[in-house]
Image 1 (cartoon, one colour):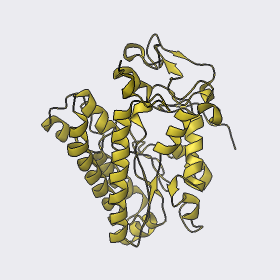
Image 2: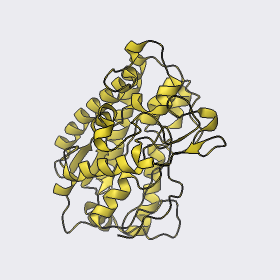
Image 3: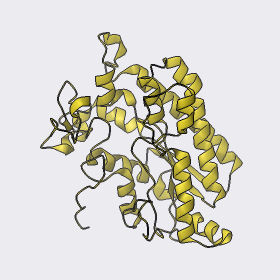
Image 4: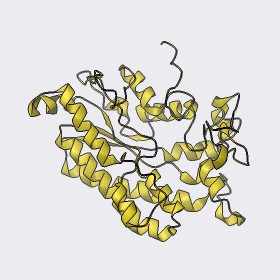
Length: 315
């Protein structure tokens, strides 16, 4: 396989999960959906850094002003999907047949929504009771939208353990050691929301699967492998641990808001593959490769993607 080109507009030092999935399934790396004039017949990437499941209006209506004023929510991405759709098929029947042979990766969504809620000082109870149900409901609505367009194979990733991410560990550092999981060093409160989100999402996906037996809806687990990295990083080759960023501006977790990765004052480690975290928020290529393999072959996709892929599908 040819050497992967230098990353461009990627929050990592190399390939992401979606890139490894594309390579394994024999399709080119997915072009950004905003690249006008591109041939999207073998896929498109709609992802945007910081995108939310909920619309900007929800945050404004609930006095969450920490969210950037960008229109990149899940709803916006579904609108971009409609624009791409017009370039790959020309009739409802043709589109349904085309998308029926495709693999959709829907998300991860929710992590950014909760991040903005924490910055607005929402309580743990408020995030769980008010925001998580809204996020899951929004996601299910979005998945139903692509199913209505003809999608028959949809991968839905859950949340990562936000309490293990350097930005969270830095911004919400606590002097109370009981706030931390002694097995991982992660902040328990933030991980509890990710676990709750994932549990509610799986229930909702099971219900959706029963309503749509003609589709294969696959839950993909980010949480469990990341927790394994945090508990036993050296077992997976992460000699620098799971909680310290490779690229950053110093501090216990090498994350500093005023000199985050890419800004003056930040430095890059010599051994990214020895780290789980790239920039304090996103991962390095090495864990993305590991996670992609566990989704393809198991045990962290239900069912494993390799068992769903058919020779007559687009890839």
